Image (cartoon, rainbow, N blue to C red; front, side, top):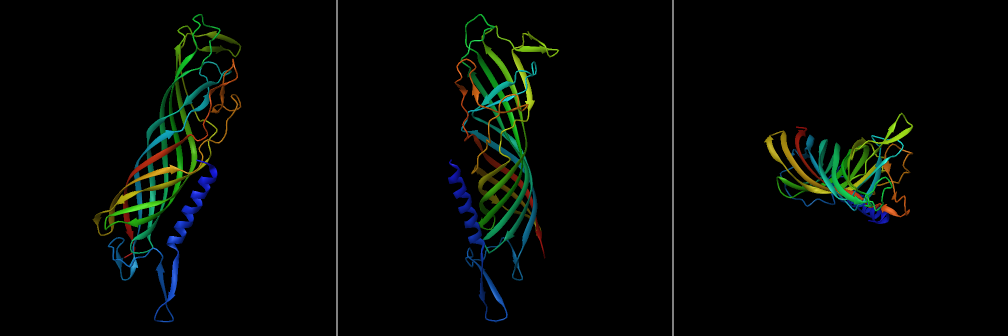
Amino acid sequence: MRQSTRNLLCFCMLFGMLALALPLHAAAHDPGKVKTSWLASDGGDVLRPERSSGAYHWYLGLDAGLTYSMFQNGPLAYYTSNPYNPKYPRPGHVNEGNGLGFYLGATADFPVSDWVGIMLKANYHTRMGVFDETLDVGEVDPQTTTGLTTVIRNQTDWTFTYLGFDLLLRFDINESAYFMIGPSFGSLSSNSATLDQELIQPSDLYYVEDINGIDDIVNFYRTASSTEEVAGFLGTRVDLKAGFGWRFELNEGLQLVPELTLAYPLSSFVDKDFTPGLESAGVFHWLSGETGLPIVENNNDFNMITVFFTLGLRWRMGS
């Protein structure tokens, strides 16, 4: 999605939320009083949030659950440290992948009418992807005698850790169920990529090992593994988040609340490419050493869609 379209969607979403929750003031029968109504109010009598003595109750809660992320719009090439020879960074690549992460958070739920509310959520969560990609590099290594091109298998386990904040509008469907939608903001605190690489062909190709920083020897290893934080991703992201929740009364002041939401990306994920050697690990444009043509041409739309399933407790505030 183009950046201008993303920016327009973000603006329209925020403007719509502000307009819907904007209070309208009108003089009551008593000139000394002011009556407040809401653009979203329908004058109905929905039981939740409960109303007592003309006041709405608001809720505070804690949430825990799982995330399921689906990475799309690859490929993406990156390099990481070489466990055998630091002079030669090891390239890897990803394309389509998915994985389970975890979610911990807190929620504040404020009603603005009989059937509309604002939900504020702060959270700490991970978005994970498991990728298994085989690539024909298209080059014949001069160390081999088979004349076959180099084929490698890259298995990547990638974990992205976020501090998030959601600003959601809640629309009650009935006494128990509700729909919510709004922007979700995330700050990338860290990422960790584990690359397990295997040389598939030719059969006489091996990794080269560095001895005392001087000599390069063949070590007869055909697999390698390393774990690094990869540079080149934007530190912030914006998603459009939408989903459903259900309230189950445990007692007068406590609710059990499962929620299911989906976060669709409105901002880019990849920031820029790096040149191998300037960082210990980073996103890069993988070019052939023989032809200078791309082996993996990065797609800057590489991103993830994430589903959140959480189970929370909500405590009613006020009498």
